[in-house]
Structure formats: C-alpha cells, structure tokens
Length: 410
Image (cartoon, rainbow, N blue to C red; front, side, top):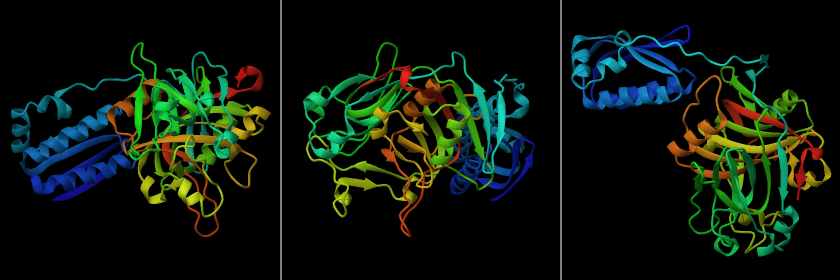
C-alpha cells in the first residue's frame, strides 16, 4: 500500500493506492491516527486507486469517521474506484462517507474575544456569560495528613455538582470507615469525580452526575471551588513546542487579572509528571524523607504519560491568602507562582477545536473513556534525574478569579 498526503487549507487530503484488506487496514489506521494526533481534524480520502476493500478496511473508515465526528471534525471520501464505491454502497456507508452524497453544513462557532500570540502557542480567549468569581472552600488541614493524626472527625462528605472544581485526598464510598483503607488523590470537574484507591486494587474509580444525582466524595483534605468560569482559553502549540503546567497556570493568571485563580484543564498532553499515594493516610502517614518517600508515593515515569488526554483541576496564585498557603506548592523553583493541581488521565483522544462547554466536554471524556490514573501533578526539577513539568500540546482552560473576601470557608 502507498499513502501520500497534502495540505489543502484546513483539510488534509490523503491518497491511498493498493489493497485495503485485513493486512493493510491496521497500517492505514495507524497512519490516519498520526495525522489526527498531529492536529488535523478535517480529512479527505482519495481512494481512486484502491482496487479492493475488505470488512477490516471498512471498519477503519467507520472508526475514523466517528472519531472525527465526535470532535466536530470531518472525514469524507472525495474520490473512489467503482469497486470501492459499490462496496460502500452495499453496506449503506455511501451516503455517510462520500463528500458528494451530502451537502456541507455551515456551523456557526463562537468567536474569541481576543487572540494571544505566545512564543510556544496561540491562545484564543473567550468571555463566558455570567462571568464572576468562584467561591472557595478549604477542607481539613494538610498537616494532619503527614502527622498521622487523621480520624473520622476529619472526614467530610462533599457533593460536587456540575459547577464544582475540587481536588485533594479522598475516596468514593459511604463514610470514613468504608474508605479508611482507600483514601488517595481525587479530582472533580464539571460534575465528574475520579479517585485513585490506595488499597490492593489501585484501580481508579469515578462518578458522573446524571439529572438529580450529584457525586459525593469522602474528603480528608482538599480545595473545592463553586461557581461559573469567567473565561475559556483555547491553546494550540506551534509545531513541536509545548506549554508546561507552570506556563499554562501563569497565562491563566495573566488573563484573569487577579492574584488567585481556579482552573479546569482538559488537554492533550505529551508528558505527564505526577505522583500518587501508595497507602491511605488514615492507616499510615506518608513520609517525605529519603528513602522512605519511595515507599509512600508512586511516581509516574515520564514515558507513561506520553500522548495522554487529561482532565485537571487546580488553583494557581501569586499572592495566596494565609489560609490557602498550606495547600499550595511552588509550580516553578525560579518563580513566586504557587499552585496545586490533580489530574485524571485517559487514553489519548483528540479534543474538539474551538469553543467548548466545560460540563458537556468533561462528561463526554469520562463517559466514553476509562480513567487510567489520578495524580498529583508536580514539577520534577532534580539535578540530572529530574524529568521536568507536565507538558501540553493543545487544550482548553476554564478560569475564574478567587479572592479571600469572595467566600473562603474552612
């Protein structure tokens, strides 16, 4: 099989020559996925020199069509041999896949209020209706986690609705005793909650809001924010450039214009750097001294997070109020910027471009994919062996300013 491609504006035209049988279908699938993963969301196929199409090949065409349709991209066949066309006609795919079989539909998209040109990326900024600050609530005391003084009195049952962003140490379950051996990292975004149990299973679990059902988390320690995001930032990195978590947080603060900001991030990551508890702090306090830290935490290898889709929630601040300080850490050793972010990791899937709704996009991500991990994100700046910061290729950030007089409760 021979595959060639050319760029025609926003459309990538891919010409295929040879047999599209079971042997070559996987090769085609990988080739098309590479094109989509590189940021092309509009594909047109030239199959005029394909002389055979098997069921395996049909399956590849149908999967890529569904994948691009889910992110409001397009996948059409511009030309095809009569043999290919008749085969697709017999399986009722001709009116779906062929460009000439259906009229183009104009989609009216929301326009960004402004566009920022960065060295690494282009950022579109959208102003959202009902923009305002988010109310912040601090739960528990981080010091108790490391002191080993956690008990049932420190556990709170917290509901996280579609208007919530939250992160911390918690578990999905009925009460403290039910979760005692499973407390670990959790994250909540737009009515979707995920946690990483610290018991023998170590398999992430999650809950998604449905109509009157609101997910609840048993929380030992954490940050929760409630309200409506004020702005949406869509960023797309240039070629092989990447934005680190620190750079994304800094940009969000600059756009928000405040000293502290709540941030929800749904993005395609080229690298994820993070750690997770190995055991519940209700049973054994984590150790930060070396070498015991290796027993208390699992660190994700940089290669394990390559080509991953992530859902992150967190706070970034240049001047946090006193009650917030214990919950935050430096995002970069050479900067005064501090923050705290947790992320749910998913198998790679490209994000739809343009304007996005937070709740709808988060629900689609959690409902259509399996959560592979939940991590506390960190910047590994160790000399020689450090792997650096989490890096994003493209994504979306929903932001809202926070302030101490905006409603901080402990």
